[in-house]
Amino acid sequence: MTIPARTSPPVAAALRDGRPVVALESSVFAQGLPQPENREAARRMLAAVRVRGAEPAITAVARGAPVVGLDGDDLERFLAREGVRKISARDIAPAAAARADGATTVAGSLALAHAAGIVVLATGGIGGVHRVPHASRHAAGAVRDESADLVELARTPMLVVCAGAKTILDLPATMERLESLGVAVVGYKVDELPGFLTSGTGISLSWRFESPRDVAAAWRAQHDLGRMQAMLVVQPPPSPLPRAMVDDAVNRALDAAARAEIAGSALTPWLLARLEEETGGASLATNVALLESNAALAAEIAVELARDVEIGRARA
Image (tube, rainbow, N blue to C red):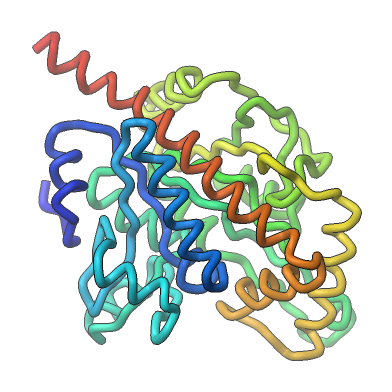
């Protein structure tokens, strides 16, 4: 298979040998988290994957080169958060032509990781259907933004571990879209959709699994059926915030975004930063913790899936 991206030597070796690899998005480091928390999150995620026997692979476009396994000076530049654009799957080719630095969202990471032959991706929360800010609900022509993550999940057969969709979104509407797009959402030791920063949302899940082995079995069954959609594995954050506190903070942030006329790709990082202010920094600590937890679970699932490769080789 030809990989249309530059892979770091450790990632290339792991893919060649059939060892477990976990893809990580780079936008969370370059746009989603402030300094120095972005560096701490990267350190903890990379360590969580490696200590469980898998190889982490941060995806990005670095000076025009699509990369699977961002490291070294390139990673340092992204952690500095200067001159790095936020790019989705549709932006990878233009970013490459412009020789730009681009931090990949979930959609962009899915595109690069799948092209490289990686099966598992870990992130914090996926994008989804945005709420209409209170100040705009009755405005003529008010339109709700919808993340490109949803469409990419519908056409990319990968297993994605997250804490649900980001709290700032319309979570019931996001779940409806995932269902319509044929994306399976399964809970890991949980019966309802987590709220990214909260343990629950009141939205019931149809499927619950108790171990990485069970999740891997579900993924193998989906793969054997030839399904082209992703499977979303959701777990709550290790230290969730009170739901009422988060809801109040989100509503205040949305009103502020409407007044400031923030929209498009700038909206999500702006709202997350505002949410940090509204919660007195509590949302930031929870975000970093859930990123590490999701990376750990993704690595455990990737290790289970890699055993299929080992068994196949032994039988051959």
